[in-house]
Length: 386
Image (cartoon, rainbow, N blue to C red; front, top):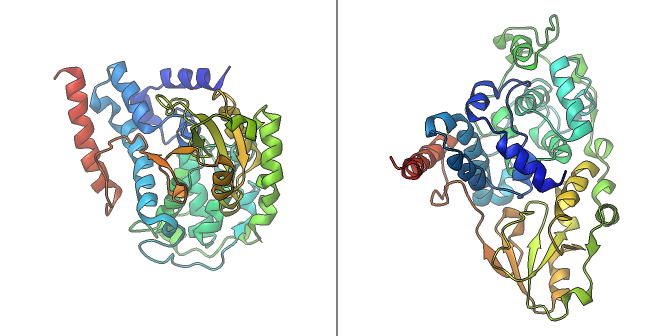
């Protein structure tokens, strides 16, 4: 099954009512659209328009669409703050004792069955339920007293739907640096949402006791990023090798003969459709500097390449934009806006936001959502002829 066929299938399987009721359960009605949205294959607006065409009432879609809005909100914050999202945003993280990763978390050996299953899924498949992400961040930051940044990078590096904006800001939300308080979960809560029945663990306590707990022995051993994800997994040679494994061709001078323009794709922009109306050569630009700052695993490289190879005529260039610019020798460059693209030069295209008119900086998600909801409710009524 092709990527496009798989995506079409998953779009048709969306059940917004079931999603709203069960999304916090690991066995709930999640869509697995995350990797396609994060890699830019589709966008939140496209999903919204698909649901409109299916004829759902806005109140039925409410819970699902609100989660789409969280994605756009995190992207808007990243757009506004840039590299500032790598720093504690509202307040410094309290109780930090180190900046490493608990080895038990990196290896899926925390002793908490529901969380360890989720980490195992992350390491093996690149998929992890959103609720398990929160539990894992809680263990690392609020119980293991790690600073959020390195552990967030570890998780991001393995996620097929890794989005640094969503990932960094979600970890900050759990750690209490982008929210009003730290997120806490005990064993009873984890059992409920992960279909487990553990008791007697270091999390089998009331919330107020967990807040005052010392670091459990299970989380005392620490490790660094270089031990859990060698940077060589996404270095220049690895990226070229992976691209060739998937049958992608590297850019050559011959490809550019007679061309006036090119369209740039990257790890965050792999849409099959955005080139519509643009007659240009698609180029997948993989900048080593980006992957050095935000490393990813071989699984993520594979997924990216499996998508890119389905875009007709795609060529790969591994190197910095400034090097590609010299090779292009005056070709017009088209690209989509993104916080990691600020150094690109050429014709910039706006992303297809859920509610494009809702822009600016917002004090909280709900101040953002209030405006988005108003816009989408109006659109839904107009579409349904109400």
